[in-house]
Length: 611
Figure (cartoon, rainbow, N blue to C red):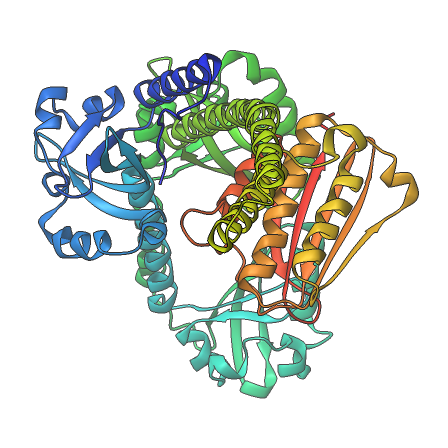
C-alpha cells in the first residue's frame, strides 16, 4: 500500500523530501492528460478528481466528489464491478475494460488501471482511465468489413481461391469447391500443381507465374481437360500471393446481369468501408473517390474527379510524393505501405491528418491504375502521443524518487551508525562495567537478569547492523557492483548454508564501474531476485552471473526452484516484480523473467547506455 507519512527521528531535510514528493505526486495527478480520480475503498465515494476527468465526464469537481464509483458505471457492469472490488489488491491493479456513463448520459468504453494508497488515514484507490471508444469502434468496423468481404466471396457467382507465394492454397470459396470438385479442406495448405498436375506447364502455370513475377494482373480463358471445362480466369498478384477468380464459360451461360451484380457487390463493399479508397492514374489524377474518402477529407467525389491527389497532401510533402508515385508506377511493384507506416493528409478545412496507408497497382482496360487505401488514425495517434508523454513523465518522476530514496536511505543509515550504533555500544560498555562492579555482590537472580540483558543488548546491536546492511549495500560505493554482489551471497550463505550460492564474474568485468544509479538499481534488483528465490521457490541452488562493458551491463540470477510465471508478482508489502521493473525503468534498463534452462526461474537485468 502506498503512503507518505512522517517518520519519527528523521531530520528536517527528510521532511522536505517528503513534502517535495507530495507536491510532485499532486502535480502529476492534477496535470495528467488522462482522467484520474481517487476513491474511498470502503464507501466507494470519490475523494479527488483531476481536470482531465472533469472535462471528459462533464461533471464539475463538486458534483464529481459527490459521486460514488458505481455512479460512473453502466448498470450492466454493477455486478461485475462488485465482484472485481472483492478481488485481492494485486488482481485489481490489472488493466480492465468498463463502460462509463457521462453526465449527459453518453457512454464510453475505457481501460482502467488502479493502485491502492493511503490518504490521511483512509484506504483509497487511485484510478487512471484511458478512453478506448474510438479504437473499439474502429476494430468493430474492421471486423464487420472482413465479415462482409468473406460473405461476398462466399456468395459471389465466381469461383475464388488464393495462393501464397509458394503456390499453396490459403482460401477456397464454396463456388470454387463445386467447380474444382474438391472440398476446401482437401486443398488448403497443398500446392496447386500437386493437386492439379495436369495443369502444370500449361497456360495456367505460365500466367500464374508471370503475374507473380511481374506483379501485374492477368486475364485469360483456357480449357482444363480432366474436368471437361473451359474457364475464364482472372489473376491478381499481391505480397501475399495470388487472388484467382474463375468461372465456367463452357456453355457461355453466364448472363451479363451476373457480372453487373458482382460489380455492384464490389462497389457496395468499397462504398461501405470507413477507409478512404482512391484510384489514380500514373500521373496522379484521381479516377475514383469513395464515400470513405469524402468523410475523411471532407471533399465531394464530384469535386475530386480528375484532380491531382496532391491536393490531399500538405504542400511540403507534394514534390516528394510525386517522385515516389512515379517510381512506384515504373517499378510495377505489388501492394505496399506508403511512407513509414503513417503519412500526412490534408482535410478541406486545412487540418492535417495522420493516415495509415497502402498502395497497390493493377491493369484495367490495358491501363495502369494505382489504388491507395487511407485510414484516419489522427485521434489514435494523438491519444498514443499523450499516453507516451504520460509514461515519460511517470518514468522521470520514478527516477527522481529512486534518487531521493537512495539519498534518504544513505542519511538514515549514517544516522543509525553514528547515533544509535554508538549508543548501543555505550550501553554494552556500561552494562559490562556494572557486571564487573557487582561481580561479588550479585545474587543468582541478578546474574540471570544481567546475562539476559547482555543477550538482548547483543541482539539489538546485531539487528542494527543487519538494518544497516539492508539499507546500504556493503562495498557497493567503495568497491563496485561485483564485490557487493559477492559479499551479499557470502552473507546469505552464512544464514542458509544448505543453499549452493555461486557468482560468475570475469576479472575484466569485476574491475568495471558503471554510473552510480545503474549499479544501485542492478544490486537492488539482484537482491530482490535472490530473496524471492530463497523465500518463495524452495531453491537449493542460486547462481549469479555478471557480464558487461563500459556502456552495457547484464545481470542474471538463476535458481532451480519451483519457478514463477513471467510477469508474476510477489506478496503485497514486498518490492516484488513490479519494484524490479520500476527500478529498471528509472534508468532506462529492462528486467526479464523467464523459465530456467531445466527448471526454476531466471531474472535478467539489462542496461545499455543511450547513444
